[in-house]
Image (cartoon, rainbow, N blue to C red; front, top):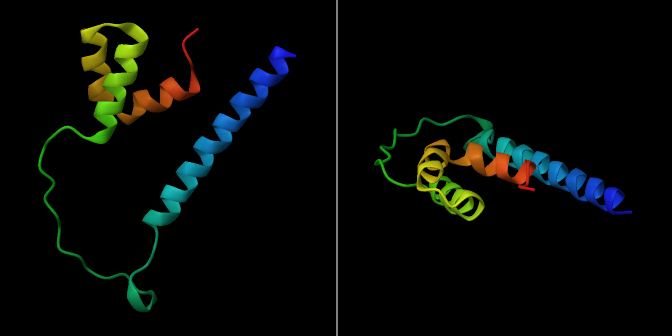
Length: 90
């Protein structure tokens, strides 16, 4: 019974991840006014710590209790967050 529940939970994680990716992709492909694409001034993004970095460091610290791993996972950012969601620590 636990195996069935665990498989169901994992399927829901994959579905949630796929749905989120689809919505983000859809949101990034929207057209400008009148159906055409408009030119926008390039925006300079200052270097800094982003949300993905913070989440990755917190997850890494809670799983590994290692500063070195937290730094490495902070550099990877969202990639590690997605990995941690798909492959929970045993």
